[in-house]
Amino acid sequence: YPKLASNIKPIFVSVDPARDSLKALKEYAKDFHPEYVFLTGSPAQVQAMAKKYRVYVSKADETEDGDYLVDHSIVIYFHDDSGELSDCFTQSMRPSDVVEKIVEK
Image (cartoon, rainbow, N blue to C red; front, side, top):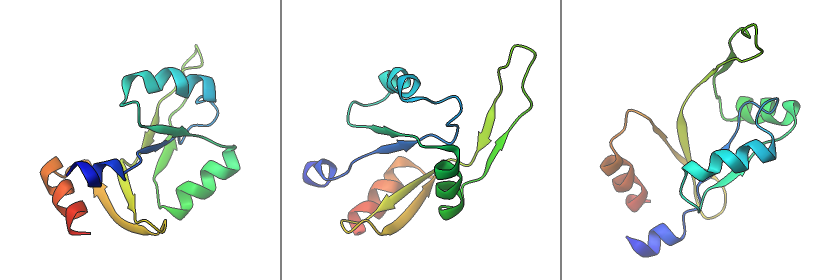
């Protein structure tokens, strides 16, 4: 489905704006396909996005050296051509099932 794939724009949204600066995301992006767009925002913007999309986010206690983990839901949100949420895909779904659902749209 090359024509369909050419219309899909993967967007990665950080849920940890305190640590994920644009510089950090640029470095992190090296591990992803070059078509990915990486976004972050102010803590208030990220919190509003998480609430809108019902994303679970929980920051663990910091270690003595200031490091910490952020637990979060892992969901791919699929939007249609008009920007409306069309479907959601979880990490438990097989890639073939995701493709099938996108092709159906």
